[in-house]
Amino acid sequence: MKLDLPGQTALVTGGSRGIGAATVRLLASAGVRVALHFAKSRDLAETLAKEIAETGQPEPVLVQGDLASETERRKVFEEAVRGLSRIDHLVNNAGIFERNPMDEGHDDALFLARWRHTLNVNLEAAVHLTYLALPAMRARRFGRIVMVSSRAAFRGETDCADYAVSKAGMVNLARCLARAEGKHGITANAVCPGWVETDMAQADLLRDREAILGDIPLGRVATAEDVARAILFYVSPLGSYANGTALGLNGGSFLH
Ligand SMILES: NC(=O)c1ccc[n+]([C@@H]2O[C@H](COP(=O)([O-])OP(=O)(O)OC[C@H]3O[C@@H](n4cnc5c(N)ncnc54)[C@H](OP(=O)(O)O)[C@@H]3O)[C@@H](O)[C@H]2O)c1
Image: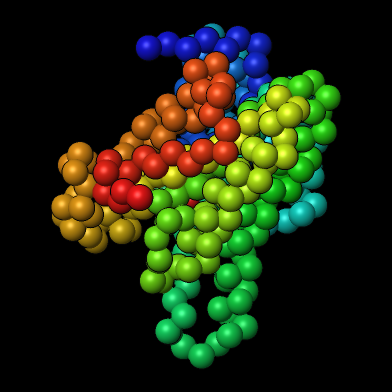
């Protein structure tokens, strides 16, 4: 099935790799002009933008920045607006997933530094970019905001409570936005994947693939494209009445 959203625009954070890159590809194939944000992977971002332009689809605008930094987030947003003129869809996808167990070592300062970093990149950046995008969306009476959350939002995580808390925060952020901004024609929703075949999950999948698969009734780990399709649903007219929802995409591995 092919969806066409010609002339529309989107800022996708973390578009250089994994779920973000698949989302950039899919949105571009639907005619959306994308601001492809990256942090360190400049080569991957440039190659992806070139690949998309060569197929005749709208060439993405590249925007670079470390989303842990308040200043760089503002720069990312301003460059995206400069490149696209306006942002119809904001996909808060960039994220990190790092071990930070509470029962290892006795270094509270290190524990807190890691905790803050994860919350900054995963949650604060999402709310900051959303805050920046909202005024123009309200003025146009249109906006689609998608949070790339996680299955971890709904279960206890033993080694990375910071990650789980950041992802739960994204789900509730979408709900808050849904109630506050719906009257302005803006929707906010969250996609909540289980394991996805990307760099982020690589080490765990290498170590525990059989156990992970044993827990997934569909018998396979998600592809980045599985998640990208759900994001396209939310920004397209097919998802126009979805607001404040959290879509589990985990092959049935975790039902709630
Ligand atoms: N993979 C999974 O199993 C899984 C499951 C559930 C949810 N998710 C969520 O899906 C989202 C995408 O994950 P993925 O699997 O595609 O991960 P990935 O392949 O590791 O890609 C992460 C992306 O985030 C960007 N990023 C990382 N740190 C950043 C920072 N400080 N500032 C700005 N950008 C930063 C990276 O940019 P550069 O490469 O340019 O540095 C990259 O584009 C994340 O929010 C993740 O939590 C993933």
